[in-house]
Structures are given as C-alpha cells and as structure tokens.
Length: 296
Ligand code: RIB
Image (cartoon, rainbow, N blue to C red):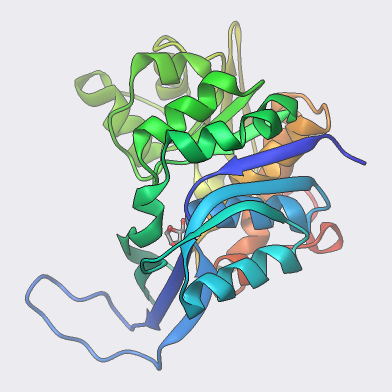
C-alpha cells in the first residue's frame, strides 16, 4: 500500500454552462444546457490522487442535500476514504462555472458547508493527519482550519487557490507551496517581476521549504534551496481546463507520499494536469495511471 495522502478542503457541485465567449459585466449571453459535475478544489485533489492509486482520505464538510450525496459518491468511486467527511444541515458548496470555446473558465463559488469547516473537525482528524505522509490543502475553507491542519501535518502541500493572504506561519510550513502565475503575482505584490523562475525564487524567500509555480501548457518551475528546475507539459488540445490545477496538486501529493523527489513528482503532475484538460468537468476528467500521457 502506498503512503497515505490526506486532503483537507472544499467540496462543491460544479454547475457548468459552456459559452462561445464569456459575458462582460452587464451582458447576457446564451450558453449550453446546464451540466452538473463533482468538484471543489479539495474534493478534486482527493479524487485526482485516488484515481492514480494513492491511499487517500478527505477531510471536509458537505450538506445533507443531494449535492452532498453526489460528491461523496464521486470521491468513493475514486477510492477516497470519506470517513472524515461531515454532513451539516446546510447547502453543499456550489460553483457556478462558464467554460469558453478554448476550454478556459470563470468560476464563482458559494461555499455553503465548506464555510463551516473549523478547528474542531481538524482536531477530530488529527491522528489521520499525523500519520499521513502528505497533507494537501487549498484555500476554499476557513483559514483557521487550514492552519490547524498544517500545524499537525508531517508534510504540507498547499495550493494557494483561490489566492488570499496567508499567515507567514502557514507559508513556512509549506513543502511545497503550489501557485500559478496569478497566485504568485498576488503573493509577491509589488515584488512580482520577471520570469516564473524569478517568481519561484522570490517566493522561496518568503519562507516555504519549496515552491512549485505551475504554467499550464508550459509545465511548471520547481524551486528548492539552491536549485530551480523547469518541468515540461505534454501538448494537448484543451476542452475544459476546470480542475487542472487540482489534478496537478493531487498527483503531486500522491507522488510525494510515495517518496518521489519534488522535481519528479512535479513532472508527473504536469502530465496528469495535461490529461485533465482534454475532457469535460473536473473530477470527471482526471486520469487513471494508464491514461496519463507520456512526457512531452
Ligand atoms: O479548481 C476548480 C474547482 O474550483 C471547481 O471544481 C470548483 O468547484 C472550484 O472549487
């Protein structure tokens, strides 16, 4: 059995409409029929890792509604241990998503049950977190829960998505901090300058033990003290980019838990992220090991 990954985070039902082009503020456009997919950055990370064969558990909250059932079913279908998913008498998180002709998206999240995840739920899962080789997180849940989990975890993988301010203590617990270029610019503020390599180095100076800057079709940059390495992504035709970053982070966590180096884990994660953009939806697009494309 592979070493355990625990994902602490959000679970959302993704309500998706495809559009020829995204509306401007104040504008109405007509789109496709509505499709509902299982999503949420935390649920997505757990399903990505589970589908690749990792031993993974998810810690989070869903509502007592049909969306909650739907999300639990998707996670269990990918082999995710949902024993630490609580159900609360409120609406499950929902994401309203438009996907454009190029596969690019806009996402608005209504957190619902995710907003109730707190230190109590994390404390109940503390033995799980202490045992896990890797705890993977994102920022669609309240910061006290993220910080509490990071304090007990053996190794923290944090995707700074959606971008928001984080305490220095949390940054210093990350190994790695995973950001895309927008999230890197958000964290660096006026210090943001130059290439992704420059950003990765500048972020490393903010305290994480390591940094991964994801670059979509261009792969990723991995920064560790003294070394910066670029990893490629295979060329694919994008259908829907929703959840690609979560697929990357879930795969990264799974590989790290198995003992891979950060660079090797990121190289594999870039291939998993590439596969994820070739199909519709988030969790519905994540590959099994045999469907991961070869290195590009
Ligand atoms: O990263 C993609 C995810 O962001 C979607 O699945 C949506 O639920 C939001 O959390």
